Picture 1 (tube, rainbow, N blue to C red):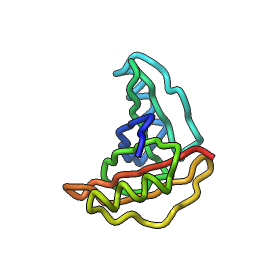
Picture 2 (picture 1 turned 180 degrees about the vertical axis):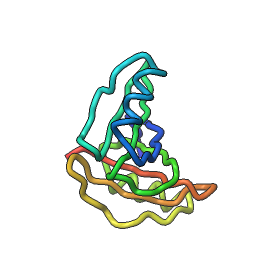
Picture 3 (picture 1 turned 180 degrees about the horizontal axis):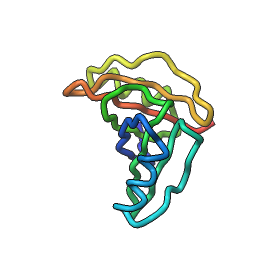
Picture 4 (picture 1 turned 45 degrees about the horizontal axis):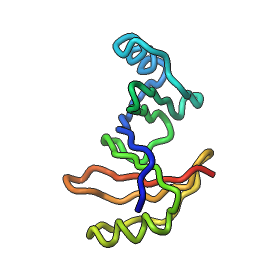
Amino acid sequence: MQVSGVATVLPVDDLKTAVHTYETILGTGPTFVDGDRWAQFDLDGRRIALAGTDRVSDRPALMLKVDDLEAARTALVSAGLTPGDIEEGPHELRITAEGPGGWPIVVYTTK
């Protein structure tokens, strides 16, 4: 599996308020906002994502961008994880597996 992007995903109940908070503390605006579903901030080559109504879990998650979702599934299984089915979101296809410590690992590719 070749990873081309990594993000920490933080679940939030009020995306608008969370975006304002992170704008203030990070000193920059979001690079992407999708209504009340999702927002992300890119800062110094790093990404923090806020999951509003589009979340895979109520726990923080690790999100990995890949080009080949099937190769990613194979890598997850080889690592001893049990990936779920491919899910289709509005902008991506994704697989979720429970990682060590119970945190979700979301592996995705853009549509």
